[in-house]
Amino acid sequence: MITQLELDNSKRSTFQECPRKFYWNYDQHLVSKRGSSALRFGSVLHRGLEEYYKIVLENGLPAIDDYSKRCLLAMKDEWDTATDEREDWWLDWRTFENCVTTFLNYVQYWEEVDKDAGIEVLQVEDKFTLALPPISGIPLNFIGRIDLVLRLHGTTHVMDHKTTSMNLNIMSNRVGRSAQTIGYLYATQVQHPEFEAHDFFINYCYSHANKSRSRDSLAQQAAGGGALFTGFKNEFLRMPEIHTERIMAEWVYMFRQTAAHIVECYKKDFFPMNFDSCEGKYGKCTYLGLCEQQCGFREANTESYTKSEWDPRR
Image (cartoon, rainbow, N blue to C red; front, side, top):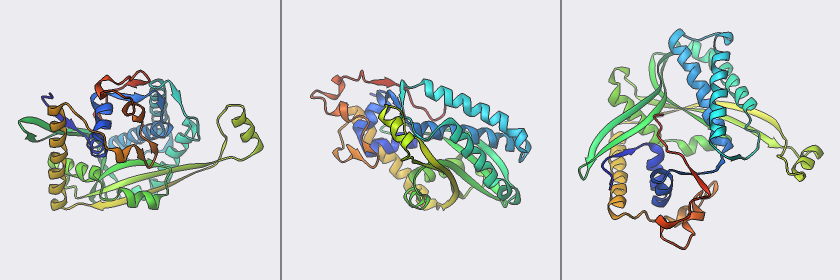
């Protein structure tokens, strides 16, 4: 039985998707030995943006010579660290070079806009632990890391960076009014009322390339190598969201309801499968092979996975 429950948005949404997936991922800390190039690309770009906005916080908007070396070194360190954590990787267009290109294009795209808006960075990568009312006597903490809090035109915005290769119109409609953005705005208002933050920006960074159908690309694939890609491009969009006090109160209620269900699973020592989630929008669940084993979930053979404990505050 647990003595404390710490939930971030990833844990909360995973449990809502499937309690058994939550057990594999966040109780047993199992992750695939094959890394996701999309996640690595996103974490490396995040690292570059983190370093860039730290420079803005310290000195205001910098010239390219003042930020490029520091940011690119941070990105390379993140790339190497992420790569070493997995045994194998899918090869596609999400290379380190394309990640650097995306970062430089992002800075160039927003630089004049932010300058005209009188950008003032208030916080970068704010790690938080926010106590909520306990569940059946068990302390409950909402934890996380907020990418950015800044002022534009004198108005404070909480901002979360999102990397995607999906059409931005589709992505913005899908993410709008997400529990993550509501929770982050709530956490900022509780911990930093002096910021007077009342809205949220989702900071989209779109990257994409097409698989080449050239003779060289097809020959390389036939020989067992990765495909060649062409037409790499970026698009950028900041999508505003406004969440009222009523919406945030409902978010707290639903967050605690999810926490209560998690506590109940621990008390019963049982995390049921949600069979509707075995096939998702990105394909089969990572843990489907474990759930299909004809044994109790605690007796499953997990040797095809590696362990990595998740905490957004690290």
